[in-house]
Image 1: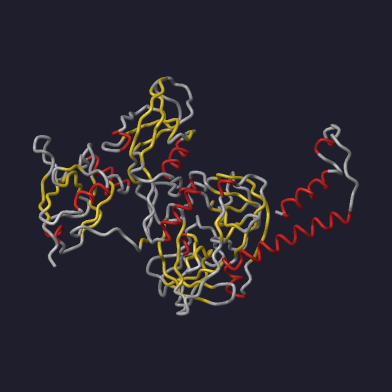
Image 2 (image 1 turned 45 degrees about the horizontal axis):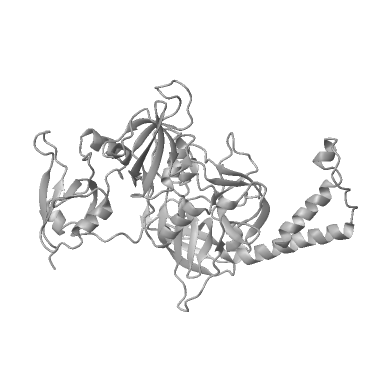
Length: 508
């Protein structure tokens, strides 16, 4: 693009007066070009013109997100733009309170914003830069990614909105120029988003421990619940000090490469820095799921970790040291043991526990992965079919899978940590694989037969089921009574460990 060429020319012009080579005493390979004020002015004009064009093209996609919740507490106080900081202390009235910016990602009126800008049961409004305000509903919200998608309730004329074009954040490099567009207060008051520009100063930054974007309680201030605690964030020196949470970070083609946020300034996080959630392949997959109103799912191996040295050698080893393997987990079925050191997942190197968790979270439940590990000093390889991570915090899902005779099931390990530990200690999970009942409709066939949430199903008839997909396949063509084998209650090792329930067809 003209801007990139112009910047190179401008930098070259500046460096001819005192380049790093000259300051080091080295001689340039060719004589420096003479100063040309007219050419310099043309270069600056080209930079300015391109910035104006990119901002003009992108800013109609940036909106203000407001929320109203009579007699309830606000989700974010005014000017509290950090999506990783949960501020819920200011009571609000029925008047909408501006909480964040958002970006239109679909011409039909879908808006991407930060998770903390929404709350189920409260009313949202969207204000566009032309000063029009629309009611909006939550399509879906996911606390692990920190993202939510709102759906504008558009006018009857089937209005089409100005959707931004996505870029690929995985292609970003330090030093690339980016433009931040946001400020929901300015959008609501005068229809003018605020814009700034700078460079990408760092990549794969971690959100500070103890700063979360959901309500999940933690045992201490180091509790981390989001992908961004594992190292995903874009860092930029573009100014984000004007309530930029949920705004657009675009490249020089006007493509969305990040959703802006700010991270509390602590040790290791530069004060002038701004941060953005990257629009890479993983986040795009998450957004596509949210656009459908569906639950975002993340892979799980079923391992407890430790950091430090291997017990076998006593020497530091790059990788993630397995401390515990949960019974019935993908890791257990793959043959992993305590003391193994995982060095690669799906061909990607694992340097530490955070890297392993991030790589596994990028994958989907039931996805087959190759695990490279060390046992002692001996390399080994295993295959595993991932389970599903239980995400702390409140999810908003508007399109749930259909139930079967009142039952919905999930992966057996998709339980909160406390419940999972309790069930594992009780031996409730079948080590060979099972699914957990996540929901049962009252007065349904399954409810009346005695099925309750939290029970584990190991078989449909004679067929073992270890995933929700296997359960759906096993029951989809059944038109008569279906036998479900439950792993509970467990009475003794000699009684088979379970019981059977007959589930009759749903009565019309």
